[in-house]
Structure formats: C-alpha cells, structure tokens
Image 1 (tube, rainbow, N blue to C red):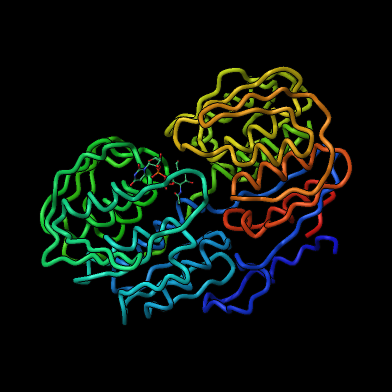
Image 2 (spheres, rainbow, N blue to C red):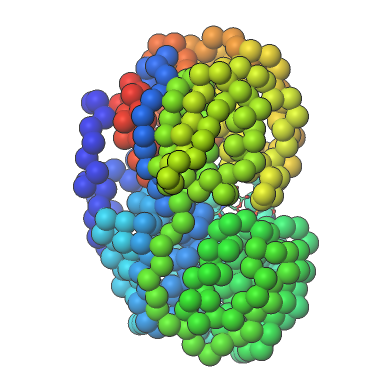
Length: 442
Ligand code: UD1
C-alpha cells in the first residue's frame, strides 16, 4: 500500500488501545523504499523524543495536571502514557498536546508490560519516590546498543538514602526519608543525570551533582521543573545544585524540537544529494552535525527559523569522526552518518566512544552492498560503491533510520522489516520522506 498522508489517524487519546494496529512493538511493520531520487522540499521537525520522556516524568512530581505541547506521537510516548495510566494517572494525547494529571496515583508498582520497552522508565523510580514511600519496577528496556547498565542510577538513589532490593528481575526501591545528597556521577550519563534531578527536586535539603551530562534535554527538563517551582542552579553545566521544595505545581510547557530527527533528515538529504528544508530545526543544538555536514561538502543557511540545506556538492569523505557527549557529535546520529558516508567516494571512519555495541546496522548495510567494516569501537566505510535494494531488518531505532537513508540512495527496491522500532523515535518518517519526494510505502 502506498503511503498516504493520514495525520489524524495518529491523533488519539492516550487511553492506549492495545488493539491499535499502527504502533505496537510486537507488530511487524514493513517499509518499502525505491531509492535513487534526490530529496527535495520542506518538512517540519517533530518534538524531541529524548526531551519529552523526562518531561513526562517531571509532570508526575505535582498533584496538579501539566500539559506538554508539541509532544511527538511516537511509540515511546504512547508506551509511557499507557504505563502511567496503569498507575492511575489520567492522561490525554490530542494533536501533540499531552496532558498528565498525577493527582491520584493508585499504585507505584510498575508492570513490566511497558517498563521493559523503554530505558527511560528507570527514571520513574526516583521521580515517584519524591511523593511515595516505595516503587517497584522491572529492569528497563530500550535499544540494544550496548550493555546499558543502570548501576549509576541505583548508586545515585542509594546516596539519597533509598534502599533497593531485587527479586525475580524486579527492583523495589524504598525510602523513609529522601535526603538531599552530594553525588558525583562516575561517567557522564544523560539518563542518570535526569534521574538525579527528578529525585532531588522534592528531596529534603540541598543536593549537588558533579560530572553531570550537559545535553540540551537536561536543560529543558530543568527549565520545566523550575517553572513548576523547583530550585535548580547550573543546568547545562557539569555541576548542578538543587534545593528541595515541598511541592511543585502543574504547568504548560512546549517540548523542544528534536535535534536527532533533524540530523537524520539532514543526512538523508546528504545521501540523496537533495535540497531539504527543515522547518523549526533546533539549529543552535546542531553545531556538531552541521560542522560535519559542511565537511562533507553540504551547504546550508538559516532563514526565519528554517534550516535550508543543499547537498548537491556533498562529495568529501569524513575521516576521523568520534561520537561524543554534547556538544560533540551525537552517538544517536552515528548510524545515519555511516549510511550517508556509503554514498561518498573515499574512506570515512567513525569511532563510537559512548556505547560498546552500536554498529549492529553494519551487517544490514553490507547486505545492501555497502563496503563497511567495524570492530567494537570503529567503523570504516569505503564509500561510493553502488548499493542495491534488498531485504533488510531494523534491529534498533537509529540503526533502522540508517537503513532508511541507505535505501533512499540504493538502486531498486529495499524492504525494511521491523519498522515499528523506527516508530519508537520518528513520528512520521514515512510521511516526511514522502513529502520530500521519496518513493516510500509502509
Ligand atoms: C540517552 C538517550 C539516547 C542517547 C544517549 C547518549 C534518552 C531517552 N536516550 O540514553 O538516545 O544515545 O543518552 O547520548 O534520552 N552508563 C553506565 N551506567 C549507568 C548509565 C549509563 O555505565 O547507570 C553508561 C552507558 O552504558 C553509556 C554511557 O553511560 O556508555 C552513556 O549512556 P547514557 O547517557 O546513560 O544514555 P541514556 O541516558 O540511556
């Protein structure tokens, strides 16, 4: 079936209908792409997945309802809403407006049904401990991109006086009081930093975190919490100080735009040598990717909130790219970057420094004819060799996006299985690419 623009079919209330056929991870969605067309046109960038999830957790810290505007309608958001509904939280999701009313939470035992689908669910431990004595959860899920331990999350909670026990794969966190603490993260972690912040805002007294991650999503979380009445200093720096308060109130807050989705479409434009305009792209947060795009030969300008890109001169390989914490090149764009490099004659190379196992997509790209080699840390691409459409399987979100990019360049038809994993993070990837002229169906 050719892709049709049916935006309204995505707008439903959040009372999650398990019969909903579009967006279940257990469904097998298949995408077909006939490559070879330069992408051209304008699309609007969705709200940020990685910002929305902790902001949804923040809404639980108040007994008053909060509303997130511009919240992406993606699988992870739907699963989070369904998970919250199970706790007794009232939620609605109508055309990008997500309302969360956590006034009456009836249980803090989180079932595994949704928790093990998303890594961000771990943040609910500390968040709910701000208001309740105990919380139970299964180990969190998420993309299979490395070990993804939760040791720092648990260690950080210990520092607040939380006692954690494990039984049959479930974690139980209990506290008498939640005491402010001084804590240094062993490694910069986005999720653990957000979790620390969410735990500290309702804790007693002052907390200071050192070696915090500095991603923009942490700043949006802190901005939201401050608007709710939290006292936070130093967000966006490696030292964050929080003075606990007794109560927070509900607010209305806009979810920032998704720098990773914008980067993905930028790289799709690069791979097809197209001219793509990204309306509302968060350009200030995209410095590293725009720098790399410029190195590839891509040209861009920003006019009136729009990022206008022109990839017709993309032709230079990129030899020494490393993924880094923000403001460095994001690990989430590493796989899409590899796919774009396959289209550029010469040798490109990327070193993955954040996750240990983030080259899963390489063997799928090889199936398409890509000359690409990797070990645990490094991938080397011999670009410019023609890619041929074939049958490939998305194994995780950003690797799936990389397969889409490679398919847009490849000759003939590519069939991508497991596209529901791509829908975890991209609201309308088929519709967006269709608008840009891609021959795509799902
Ligand atoms: C978040 C993003 C994800 C992005 C990643 C890195 C969300 C929902 N996801 O994931 O898209 O790829 O940041 O930018 O925002 N680590 C530990 N122990 C822990 C926690 C993390 O060792 O307890 C390690 C991880 O294995 C990894 C590194 O810290 O090597 C960074 O991971 P982290 O920043 O925590 O990633 P996430 O927050 O899971």
